[in-house]
Length: 140
Image 1 (tube, rainbow, N blue to C red):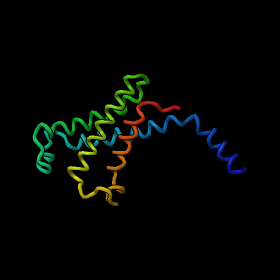
Image 2: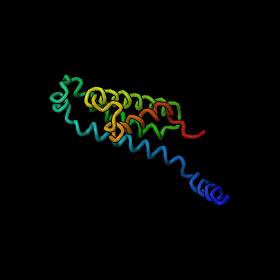
Image 3: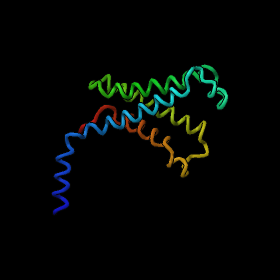
Image 4: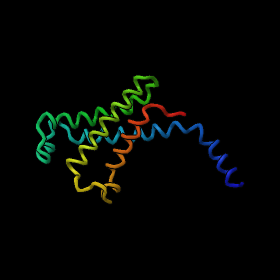
């Protein structure tokens, strides 16, 4: 009974802050993608062309997709309408595709291994998938 009362008290106190959790996830994901894209500038990224054999067009698109999806996932969280919801899902879809390609191209040896589940990449993928499935709908 004492644990239940403590739980009720904690829930009552933190309930007003619940919406912040979504923004923490959104900002973490967005900032990570902005940084990943920024690190590949200027475009076309010579490193992407050398390391992965990307064409100049692909070496331009990859960093721009990372930066734009990072910005959009953050901004769309403040648009509390259908446009915000669709932009959240669009940017999340880009993030999920981006991370899927990163796994396939750069980390094929990671599939279903300890390396995958101890890397930041799986969390970026999972957060992207979370917002793709959830959109801007944060309340029941």
